[in-house]
Each structure stands twice: as C-alpha cells, then as structure tokens.
Length: 407
Image (cartoon, rainbow, N blue to C red; front, side, top):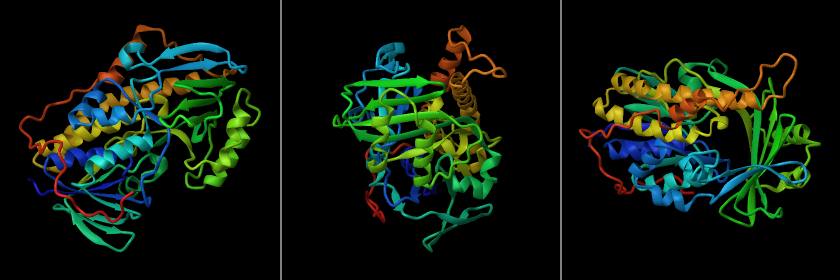
C-alpha cells in the first residue's frame, strides 16, 4: 500500500470513479461533496467504445447494465407526433445515437458510490474552503471547520468547479459557451411512453421524453438557443421561469410536460458549455472530468471522458510512484487528443442546432468520411494501458470506513 492520501472534491461520477481506481492502486481516499446527499435523476449518460472496457475493468459491467434506462431506440417526430426519423440501440454496434449502455446520471453515481463507500471516506455537506500547497503536501481547510493535510487533491466537482477557480483562476477564463441551454426533469408518464425516446424540434428549440427504469415516470428534456445568457446555476426558481419563457409556444406535447415543472423532484438546467485549459494540474492539485475538460452534453461523451480519465489518472499517478509532476503529465498526454475529439463533436452538434440566418455558417455535413473518423477517435481514440507493474487491490471493497453521511 502506498499510503498516499488523496482528497477528491465531488461525488457525482468522476469523483467516485477516481476513488475506485485510487483505492485499488493503494491510496487512502477521501471524497468531499458539498451536497448533503447524492443527487438523483439528471440527464441520461452513455458509455461507448473504450468506456465500456473501463467499466468492465472496474468489475461493474453487470451493476451498470442492471441500472440502465432500457431505451431501445429514438424517434424524432413532428408536431402531431408523426415519426420523421428512427434510431435503434443496436445501430453502430451499440455505440450510436442511442447507446447500448445508457443510464441516468444519478443512477450511475449511485452505482459508483455503492461500489466505493466501504473503502473510501465520504464527507457529505462540506466543501474545501481554503487550500495551500508546498513541495510535500496540501493543507486543506474545510467549510465545516476541519483542517487536514493530503498528498494530492483532485477536483472532480464539475463544470462550475470551485476548486478550479481557487487554484487556476476565474470561471470565465476556461468556460466556453456553445450557445444553448439544456433542462431535464422527471414527470409522470402520462404520455404513453414505452421504451422509445421521442424528440420534437422546431426553430432551434427541442422538447423530448425519454424512458427511465420506473415506467410510471419519464424524463423530460428541453433545449433552446441562448447565446450570451448568464444563468445562476443555484437559483432554481429563476431557471424554471427562464425555461417557461424560452419554451413557451413550442408545439407537440410541450404544454403537458411543462405542467409538471413545479412539482418535479429533480430539476436541472444549465448552459451547454465546455472547459478548455492548457493544463489540468498545478503542483499537487489536479482536475478530472467536467472540471478539467467538459465536452458538454452535446458530445454524448462526458461520462466516457470522466470514466476513462479516472482510470488513466490513477494509473499514471501510481506508475509514477505518486510523483505529481510525472503522473499528471502522463495523464494529460494520454487524454488530450481524446478530449479534443469529443469537444469538436459537441461544437459541431451545437452548430447543427443553430437557426439558419443571413450571417450563419452552413450546418456541418455529417455524412463525410472525415466525420466517421472523428467519431471513431472520440469513442475509441485513447489507449488503456494495463498497468501490469502497478499495485491492484482488485475490485473487492476494502476495510469499511465510517462516512459522515450515507445517502
């Protein structure tokens, strides 16, 4: 066992996935999450290509598949519900528009938490308030009053990463908006939805419904253009007002879906944005997932980047003997081209939703060979070393550690 003490900020997907691999490589891991418990629901996230191999190496293939949405395809429809286009789950070997592994963000988060909770210390309802590092370690002050020292600190706290702001600079320096806003929330399934996702698009806006495991409910999805909007991501009432304002008048089933906006338990809205950084580490502090390289939901690969990144970050740190400079550099070297391919796909998808105007560029042509090559790079364009010379405690959980809260 290395005994290397690592603090991870964020308990959504990237954080618990990294905790899994750090623990297996011999580190002592603490995960701090500012929310009082795991957040349920959220958008559906996908695992394609090389990401499926990472899940298999985690020993979680069966658990992830058991929690999948069971979606078998998607229809785009007109305002009267007539089908315009159909996509099936087995298209492109299960790596197409509807992925073979599709799971709600909250359900994947729960699988990862259940897998790690007995060998990792989780602290809910707290956050990093201050941080100072020297050549040998990082002193962390928590908002709850605790002060502790760690060998490494990793920010896996999402697009709005507070740790990134604290160590690397202001949010605006790294976040690139793609001109759209997405919203998700669960509704009663009073729309006759079976195992098919349905989406309606009109003038750059869209409304959709997707099946989830609980057949009595469905997940509503909306998107609308918003070039320079500054959304307060913590003001839910303002977000709901904005959604009503921007989606008002949209046809199809939209009024019935909006009727459930005030009683949903799991509303989420945010700008479609990417994080672009020259480096993902500073001294003994590193970043992972959306905090480092958000590709946005328009890529369909944000979860893949988080899971693959977690595998490579833990592996490269352990392979470097926990030397942060060497480990972080190797992780960045392996990940950057993979990240850039996925960010490019998201930018193209966002452009394809723009409403044509006199000054807008023509939408991308997705039929060319160049696009097929880009998709292949975005799904499989990263090598997964087997880290044969690196310690691996295997998938079984370690010695139970008491958590300060248990969702």
